[in-house]
Length: 129
Image 1 (spheres, rainbow, N blue to C red):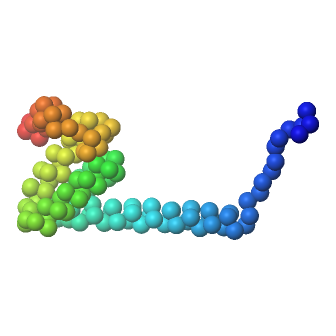
Image 2 (image 1 turned 60 degrees about the vertical axis):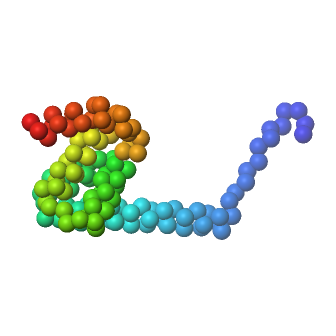
């Protein structure tokens, strides 16, 4: 290469690559929409028969925490016959814990010590007023 020449080259993507990327983007969008529909259906399942307040609280949480709560309640429903009051209490208590950590930590990141030392006192203040 001679002095003063630039080393730029233009490479254009083939139509096949562009079409593949478009297909992948459409598949990802469809998967996200399907996951959202499944997520909403799960929330509807666990809040069936109780106030819409609880569904709205779950939808307001970060998706990781909301999905953890939903899966926990679904598991409990499969194991035991949950009363409406017990479902409400669990959903609300876990919602409050997520709020306590300002929705910055997922439930998987919260340590036992954090929950025991600070979270339980906070829950007692919020629920047992």
